[in-house]
Amino acid sequence: MKQKIVVFTGAGVSAESGIQTFRDGDGLWENHDIQEVATPEAWSKKPKLVLDFYNERRKQVLKATPNEAHKTLVLLEQFFDVQIITQNIDDLHERAGSTKVLHLHGEILKARSTFDDQLYDWKKPTLKLGDKCPKGYQLRPHVVWFGESVPNMIVAANCCEGANLLIVIGTSLNVYPAANIVNFVPEDCKKYLIDPKIQQSFIGNNIELIEKKAGEGVVELVNQLLSLKENV
Ligand code: APR
Image (tube, rainbow, N blue to C red; front, side, top):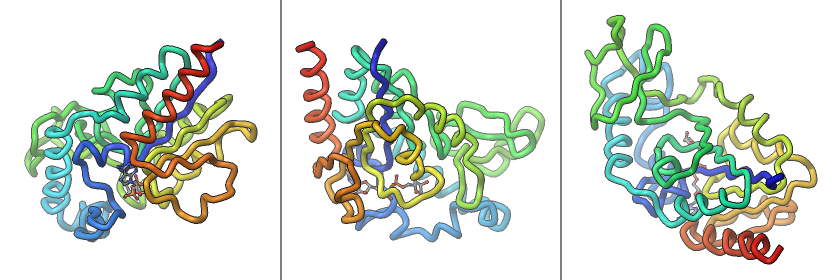
């Protein structure tokens, strides 16, 4: 029976692929007002502004490629049952080859009908006002906005059951309920945090800290885990 690893990722895992994070120095929320572009109220008041914001996000994702961190995580699947749970709306884990990826905050390469929440692949750079579902209703980005529920949270909690290892990569753990993932794994689950700027609050929280960028920290940890397996 393979040991189970849950990998919980945030914007930092895609930073080295050229996708902006949210709360770093040059982060998205430094230059955009969440209330203007990432809430249901913004969508009802200024849908074009919201669509333009996510069109920029989608263009960044379409230009990006998986980095060393995304690719190295796939190697774990040889010896472990690996479940990726990501806050990211890009498809870089999937493009790298990870086979079990759960998105908590949606997927930018999908559009959602404002009538029945039906999803449609949307790989065109822009989604505009007037782009409608087959039933004739406006499409919106398939992204969870602030103030909206996170439907995959229950599935994510179930994925954490029985985890032997939790690897947290590139998230400020600022946003709930997503950040609760770290509390859903069993008490005896070994935890690692990979981030170049570890927040003080994580020190002494029985998490092994790897204060490095994802590209380097993930390679280091995966090599360590695989060498343990190969020597068994
Ligand atoms: N490698 C690893 N971590 C990195 C790197 C890197 N190269 N660069 C930055 N980081 C770290 C930062 O230090 C920070 O801790 O990634 C984290 C990014 O934090 P945020 O920008 O807050 O992103 P995230 O935690 O994913 O945000 C959660 O907030 O706005 C919402 O829906 C949005 O899913 C997002 C959620």
